[in-house]
Image 1 (cartoon, each protein chain N blue to C red):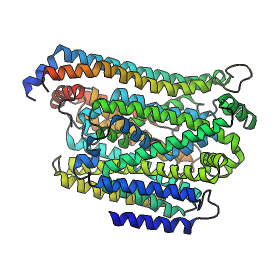
Image 2: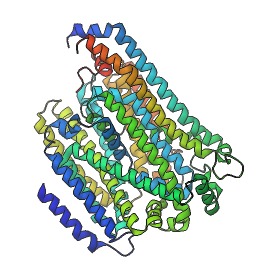
Image 3: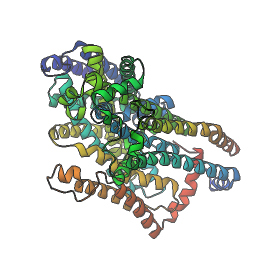
Image 4: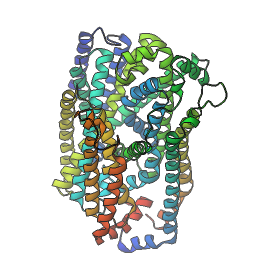
Length: 103
Length: 532
């Protein structure tokens, strides 16, 4: 790739909007998993009684069990949502830009 | 190659019956031996097939970039789910209850981070190792020295922990003497990687992942069937046999700072493990890289949910007394549950699965360590980035052999040592040395070579020193009464310091060339133009 070509891509408004979108989305997703995980850790540190109580009177299952499993499922669902977003938005934008610059 | 297969097959048929002791859990169990031989024959067959396709550097390090996202997802899961997580976490759930689940969650949450911050740029910018990405716009030699150091440190620590753990496991399960077990594992691991490179390693990991997920699923369904497929019934029985404390969070998270520190190490350590990062170069493009994290996260998360049920199943169906009387930390909970469910035949199958699990992990580690030594250190540092492919692959093969022998020797040397700190240290180094430099090199324009070197050196130095000063080494091994460093995991200090030092030093130095290349790098990072 020549310098001019490179400059053209870097200054292309579509490319700039792509960078902005990808950065924003990945930051939102990262924040989501950090908030979910560290809320769980803080709940463990300060809310042991809450997590240790039965989900309904008389049951052996504690509130902590569905919450813990929920964190695992949430982590997986987040990666799924990201793939969904990227397939729907990121990939077509990349394709379009590559076609535009014939790369 | 054929000769080697025969030698191994010969050695195994001789060694298993003749060394099987009486105290062993499985011993000469024909089902175990049959599965064991089946797995070895299949994987050696694959190695033979892969050897023909492992000649060029891209083939040897990255399986010719021919692995699909789904296959890589399975292989990533196979690379990551060690025998420690299968036996260790099931054992932890059995002996400590709910806290086992907390631990496994920590091991999972690094995966979304890999996906959102690392996977796509890593695939687009690098060639064979994560150090390629850090060195992309910085000066090759200083970066590669530090990155190779970080990778090799993680690999060696992790390898020793795996070797010692697996030697003990095989001794306990099959009755083979510890040293022979370490030799068998080391020998097979060297054979896979030396001849079959990444392609053979990948398929060993895929087969292992399928076996492990399948075995754990059967165990879970079988266990739940005994409780009318009602988890509530299972928990009720746990409450009756072990007490209601098993279903509540216990002592694992008593100090929030310690818990956050451990969480940081597990989360960002996963995103800095060289053998995991290397797998992203086996797929054709960033799209497949992204897909592979989705599958890996699903498989690993599913597996941890299964181990939770398996651990509790063992409490009820085997009994705590028996679990704690065999093997440290309840490590034998899962095999004992298998025996309780399906007798010696099923136990044999699960034992063989555990063996496959170990092999897949150590093979991945050895390949990552060898690439750091050859691609980063030899080619990047000594040859200044210029070397023929033939020469590079040759050096990698020598490195595989050397690392394999080191792993066997250290595995035997550390037999009776306390190695509990090693995996923690490996994760702390990965989180503090590899991850900050990798992330900053991807996202921060003003990052400089001096900043990167200072950051990696700080992370490595602090994680090692703080682990030595912490309870796990200072008190448990060196015998001092009180730890100097109050937390069990150093990541909260060492990782934060690595970021701060990296930022401050980069701001104090200027590297116009690197800033200019950052702009150019953007096109490749986002669009994949020019990606390998």
